[in-house]
Amino acid sequence: MSTAAPRAAGPDHLWSVDEHLDDILATVRPLEPIELNLLDAQGCVLVEDVTVPVSLPPFDNSSMDGYAVRVADVAGASEQHPAVLDVVGDVAAGQADLLHVGPGQAARIMTGAPLPPGAEAVVPVEWTDGGLGAGPVTEMRARGLAPEGATGQVRVHRPAPARAHVRAQGSDVRAGDRALAAGTVLGPPQISLLAAIGRGTVRVRPRPRVVVLSTGSELVQPGEELRPGQIHDSNSFALTAAARDAGAIAYRVGAVADNPETLRDTIEDQLVRADLMVTSGGVSVGAYDVVREALSSVDDEDEPGSGIDFRRLAMQPGKPQGFGSIGPDHTPLLALPGNPVSSYVSFELFVRPAIRTLMGLTDVHRPRARARLTADGALTSPKGRRQFLRGRYADGAVTPVGGAGSHLVAALAQANALIVVPEDVESVAPGTEVEVVLLG
Image (spheres, rainbow, N blue to C red):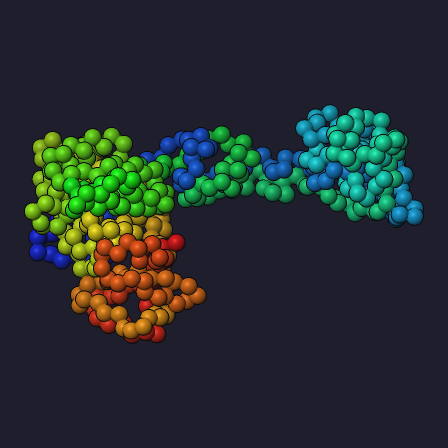
């Protein structure tokens, strides 16, 4: 969702990385909250605190298969002198009508079953002779815990303190406690908690729908045979996977040929399922840079307030970038360069934060760290450009992988960090402390 047009600057303005990112984050707004069923809400962000309506567990219950007893009745029990108790019946999980345990009595109890009135502790069946009582015994016998020929009494061989093997009411969470705070991303444990406290639906910001498409007449679907001059389309796969990793619902569109009208039609067709659009390729000033040609004139009478601004950034890789909005809903669009490394680095720096912002998160950036550079020689960087080099980070050190070329996909696959070389630094010697962006 976009509420404002991006800033415009003169055609000769060289944007900094921070200026471009600030413009994106000032334009993109979180999606409107909706109510979703629990499983549909996985990966979404809560928009309100969730309080506990009923304590967990809602009643005292047994953590073991065994016998519910009174503490005084088993005090001093041993192998030589067991406590002999009359078994008055069974207490199963889910049982509503509970029997009463009086002096000299015990109730056979199953894991999760309510502690019956009068009982103060549970002795595991392993502490007893496994004796069976007069009540139903099918479950105990099926578990192999009940010997044949057992009587209506049980012999307990060990004492039990008060509350032994009893899960207390509210020992997990109490009614009125805050179960989850607004801003929480709902993963499997959070979904489990919501279900446990009886919530069937929850109010969240939905996962953004991101449409990814790449441009280039030279691009061929993976699995198809390459002809002279062709390459396989990797960008759309990388960016779709990256969008999903960021938390989005991502849709990959097949590569679009270098035809402005076809590209514009494709984008307009995809707007119906897009909260954010991402393109790769065609953002420079060459004769076949189709994205710039197709979208530079997007601001028209039918779409007031829309527009795509194509920029030059003081960074390497990823100098050419485009950003703006398109369509009647002013859907944000980020146009990334076509070289694979440039495209992926640009995604991490600009698209991922936009996706996280749409989700309603406050911390939208990859974590960063300081690391000692380990390399065979000094790293060089162009003056006035912020360079992002692929690196392998471990144990406080980072090692460059591959070179500075923006086409080195194999090196990118070995990297788990980006080494940041500031604009005013032209050489970085081995052993120097550098900043790294941690990718995973």
